[in-house]
Image (tube, rainbow, N blue to C red; front, side, top):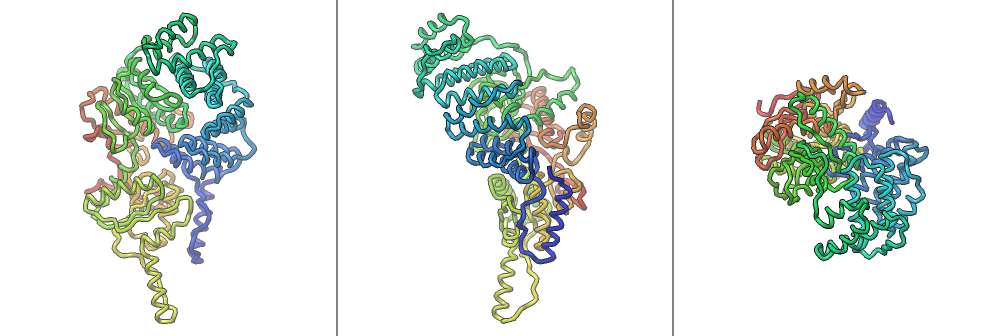
Length: 615
């Protein structure tokens, strides 16, 4: 990995030299690597493509195994965003030497890419040349991909054989049941789409029995009652077949008693999926809060993996097994899917927000680290600080568009005015064009040139920005903000109160000198406080590296447990007021959790806490 302080020094020297010599632009890419945590946060917020771009930038700034690892992460995120060609570009960034783990990962990503492109035959040919790994997680992933490739290539018998081999790697009865349900669905789809399926050609009786179910499952989907005699006949021929249980539940509707029924809180996270890094941070925070609760007050907790299973199926399984409260799922798409479930379910604390136009079901609570909510909070702070007219400089793309829209709505609702907005390309390091236009410095220079033309002589000149700006809102992630803030100062806007969201701050004293004067809200876990200090002290000895890092997702998981406990213990109709690591938490009328954050300003690279607005 690159040395961050050294890179920062190089970037600072380059910027200073540019300023002294009057060069108009900074053409090199940012030397400070984007944040891995930023990528994890984007993935959690449902912006897989945004996360992939951050990983791609990290890959470009590294070499060797580190470059390959970030390129693999970028490819996985692009695949999750269904952007196959971008994933292919990320994979093309990899270069020898590969570690042993990367030698296993690369061909599997090639298979996923072929599947994403709809190239079933290529996917099958590729995975047929890869040896099955010898450890559980890797072998399970390999066999699941082999099953998908087989069905995509029109080879259902090979798909069944892959699932049968997969079963020995599955950790529990629930995973085994879900795997068989998924296989039955794949066989039904293959039959409905005209794939040639010949059970008689299969020598293995288990594989043959599965293949016979393909047509029966398709018939049951069209006419459940009419297919019953044929299904009963299949059961008579195959009394000991491993599919018997799901034939009863999926095709005949005869429910089987769930295993290990016990009241519990269900935590739904994609522990083994592409969101695994974010999910593990949330899980660690959740379980830290759990173990800090007195033993007599702890509910039973079960963690359900949504990474490889449909979230509706996971909710159903958790409910059947006695879940009395559900925390999760994590991604926006999963939360939307859960909100549409018609079946009875326990109360849910979703770990993301529904889209604004979606109605909120009963017993459905929403908790998220929302940049839009922070933008609204900043707008209210600006108004309470007495500022009314200002500008916004925000990143181009989906994140910046959403943050700008939320800020604009709130500032105008409070009587403020946006004089102008500018979008910056965060893949570059020079934002001069956008800044000079939004500050109208380019207009000042144009007037100077006209006057010189009229007078026919050179005039001494110092550009001026527009004089009616009372505030600047400059939301961006930390590595971009460290480039943006100095350029605003360079272009005569350093004296204007400048605000950002918490994305702009990372707790690194060596890296925040460039953010001098920046005002922003953030959570106690990042800024410090009694609870944050107590949690860090309590976990310091329990963690191998001396304590959890200041991950916002860790704090998010910690507070998710506290919220779930409050809602479960006080009743879902009660209001709550919870002190958390992400802020002071309470519910609004839409059952969304609102966070009261702490305000801070950077001075000489250090945090200065600010009083609450209006004080």
